[in-house]
Image (tube, rainbow, N blue to C red):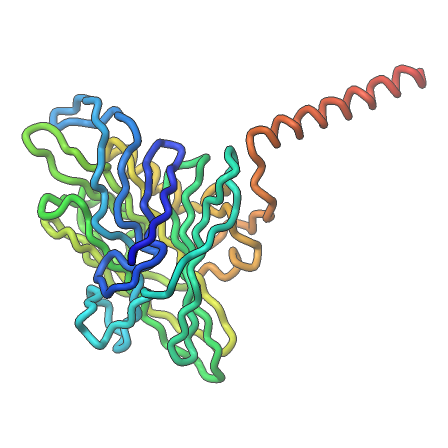
Length: 320
């Protein structure tokens, strides 16, 4: 059985989030995104620097599957390898957190998986006031001794054998463990490319948990990366990943670089305790958790403030 939740970001990119996967899979498990496509034509770049109107689709064939490497090596998740435990086949997901401009929940919440003293859960968020998808992967040590955890993220890109690494955070086109982000796209066929241009965001500078391994290369549609960290008894750590889809490589790089700084929009639908448990980024300062306010709510709030200001002004005039 397969379940999916469809969420569209504010650029019109629709993400298909796997909510109930009941079969073994390498890259499209529970909490992964099976596909992302634009709902309308966008101004896509061409080989010679031009623009063409195109409804870009087929971003993924499965993106951001989580597996635990039981031998603590970073390698591609393999459902046929007993050294990997997949976060998968957990039953239906739920939703939470209303959007900023709609009455639709924007965050998909997945059940807890328990492996010995390690508890894992995941949440996937797509905003309606920004353009990205975000994964929160929670790891909790319920035992009395420290645990060493190696978490690997497995992917299958829609660009297939035409996958091309465009650039990275240090300016070259080589994915390295020191990179905070990397961009890829489907290389041009003739002068056009039909897939969204992607930005993959892994970590922030100065974080306590950083990449232990990464594999993103030209011609390979199965990129992966992983983290190794220690969980003390009772401790929870959260790893955040983002993906960006844009009509141009320049736009995907710019958006990926922006997300590395964790602007307020990147932390929507997270409590202050959750923000403090982030391990692979440094949160500039905790963003106060407030309920999402719809466009109507903002108008009501603004009207209320204006009426309050008018009342104060009239009171001052009458007193004078």
